Length: 123
Image (cartoon, rainbow, N blue to C red; front, side):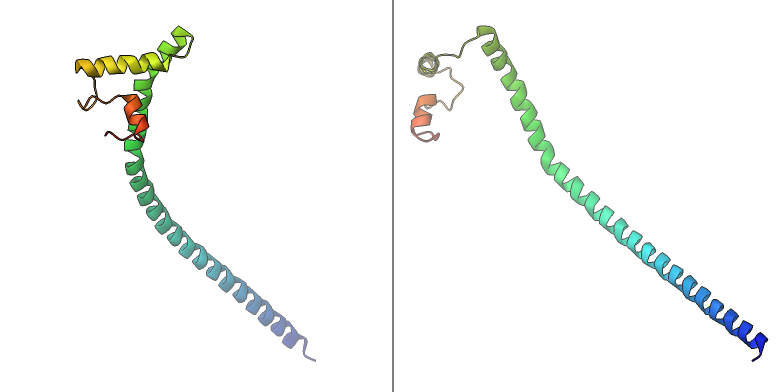
């Protein structure tokens, strides 16, 4: 047996292993590059969806803020009074306001109890 032939075959096998390893590394790098491209596309799409959803959510948050701002003085008044308001007195006051024509309603003379008895709809 020729010792130089064995050595050259060993070097050849090592060379093939190295080549396979390099090719494997190149394939992995290419897959990562393609995955990064997909992620960039997904990020772009995700960014567009977030922008669209933010546009839909902004008016709702604005309305919620206005509702809370309108509710705050009423809650403060309830805290100062320390008791629950009498709903019958509130209905009587609403009737008096509607009868005087100074209510903030539609001008039809309806009050909260009428709306409640009709399912929340004006007659």
